[in-house]
Amino acid sequence: MIYREHYIKKIREFYDSDLIKIITGIRRCGKSVILNQIKEEIEKTTNNIIYLNFEDRKVLATIQTCDDLISYVDNNKKEGKCYIFLDEIQVLNNWQEACKTLRLYNNSLFITGSNSKLLSKEFTKELSGRYVSFVIRPFVYEEIQEYCKELNKTCSISDYLIWGGFPKRLEFNTEEAILTYLNDLDNTIVINDLINRYKIKKENLFRSFANYILRSNSRIFSAKSIHDYIKSKNESCSINTIIKYLDYLEEAYIIEKVKQYSKKTKSELSYYFKVYNIDVSLNSIRCLDNHYDLSHNLENIVYNELIYRGYKLNVFNNNNLEIDFLAMKNNKKYYIQVTYTLALEKAYEREFKAFNNLDNQDQKIIISNDDIDYSTSTVRHIKLKDFLLMEDL
Image (cartoon, rainbow, N blue to C red; front, side, top):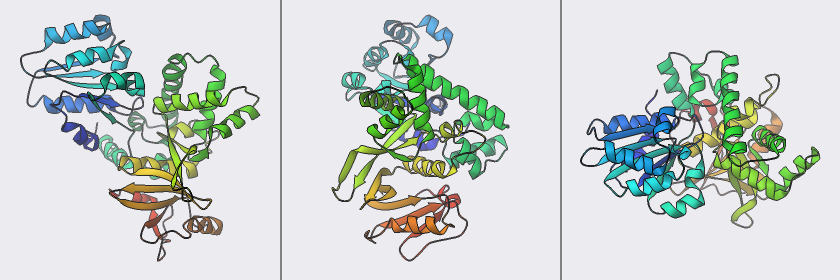
C-alpha cells in the first residue's frame, strides 16, 4: 500500500502530544493503513507500543468495557511514554472515558473510527481541548496512479470518473468484481452504519432518500426541494426528517454539503447547498445499463481534488448565474467552472457567461475533459488530465 505522506505529515507533529489523535473518515478509505504506517514510523525509535484492532473478535472478547481497556494498557505498557493505537474504537462503549484517563499517564493515543460520532457534540464537549482530528478521504487521482504502479496496472481518467478512489477496488480486475465490492461496501455503510445505528423505522423511505441524494451529486438542493421530490413519489415525511437524514449521511462521511455564497448579500445562504459524494462510485453503482453520469461525476471529482489540496469552497451566485466553486487558499480567490466539454457552442457560452462582471484580479478558471485549450485573455482553461496532476492552481 502506498505511503500517504499527505496525511501523515499533518499528524506527525502531534506524535508525542498528550492530545488524542482521532483519525476518521468513511469506511475503507485507508484509515487503518495510515494508523499502521504511523505505528511503523514510531517503532523505529521505541518498542513501547500497544496496538488493538476492535474489529478483531479476539480483542473484543478480551476488552469489553473502558475499564478493561485501561487495565490492559496498564498491564502491557513499558516504562516511559507509551504509544497506543486503537483501531475502530467506536465499537467500544464509553471509549472516550478510557481515552480521557489514559492520556493523563504519559501515553500518546491514536484512534480511528468510521463515523463522526467520534466528533459528535456529546463527545467534543467532554474532550474539548484534548484532541486533534484528521479526516481521511478515498484516493485522489495522483494516489490512484501511485497505487496502480505498485500493483503493476493502469487506471485511466475515465475509470476514475466512474469507479472513484476507494483503495481496495483498484485490486480487482473486472467490472463485475468492482461492482460486487462497492455494492457490499455501500450496503454496509447505509444499513449497518445508519439504519441500525439510528434505528430508522422507515427503512424504505430512507433507502429511497439515500439513493436520490447519491444519484444527484453536484447539484443545488434545499431541504424543501428534497422533501418535494420525496412527496412526489408518494412517500410521507417532514422537512425535519429530511434534514435529519442529510445529517446522517454527513456523519458517516458519505456526502459533504457546500453552501452557496451570494454576491448580492455577501454572505453564505444556508438554505441552499450543493451535495457532493465522498466518492463518485456511490453515484455510479446506482446507474442502470452503464449510463454513467460522467458530467456530474467530473465536477464531484474536481471538488474532491480541491478539498484534498486544502481549498475552502463555496458555490458562488453571480447575479443568478451559478459558478461551481469560489475556491480560497492563502488569501487568493479562484472562480472555477467545471464542465465535461466546451466543444458544444451552448456549453461554451454558458460556462464563460457565468464570469460576467467579475473582478479580473481574481483568477477565472474552467476545467473540462477537452484536449483543446480554450483559454482566453481573461479566463484560464485547464484540461482535466493536467488539473489532476497539479499540486496547486
